[in-house]
Amino acid sequence: MTAGDPGALLDNLFWNALAGSQRHMALGDDQVRRYAPGFPPIAGFADPSHPRLDLLATLVAPGESLYCDGWTGAPPTGWQVQFEAPMLKMIWRGPAPSQDAQLNLVRLGAEYLPQVTTLIDITRPGPFGPRNLDMGEYVGLFEGEGPSGRLVAMAGERSAAGPLREISAVCTHPEMQGRGLARRLILHLVGHQMERGEVPVLNVLSRNAAAIGLYRRMGFEDHLETLVRVIARD
Image 1 (cartoon, rainbow, N blue to C red):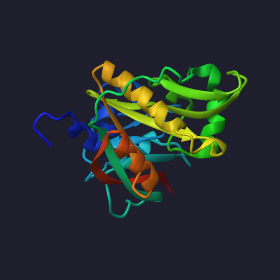
Image 2: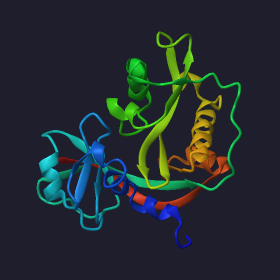
Image 3: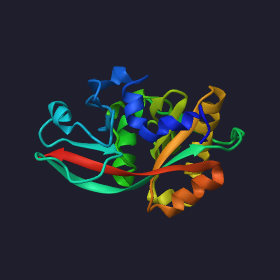
Image 4: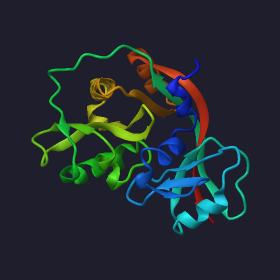
């Protein structure tokens, strides 16, 4: 990592997004923030080694679960860890990809939310809320004519911190996997981000070796392995 490398923001991406350019989407203070309800259920801490879950408790509804990363150890009294797993943060280091003129993609807005929700429920790509579609460019491929056709693959943009732009919600319907659809959608987003002077990044569970291999071949490089958790109040 060289001095001034924007990848340093990736170490604590969620916090840097919530406290930075996406603070208008956030609730919280200078120690802990979360995306507001409707956006993805994600929290960030100014100091992940000492997460202020006592402050986060005032921002969480009973029974609500939130994703966060970067801290380990036993949760404090009043909290439980519902899920945890190593997660790899990756950053684009490849050249700008050429745009795929044959890619008949659709920009996904609110009118496509029912199809998006159906695909998210089937594939479970990670934290997603109905207002994710307001966070950046979301694109999809349909079988048949949208919005009445079936959405079979999608990808979009979630967190943003400085020049970093996270690619997220990458998913393909099980019946359509193995056709390179996700790769083509990701490269479309990467190209647009680089045109805007942004640096593409993404998060992927470390156990997903197939996806990590694909991302490396495309032009992403490993940045940092961290621990992602889903937490909830007791």
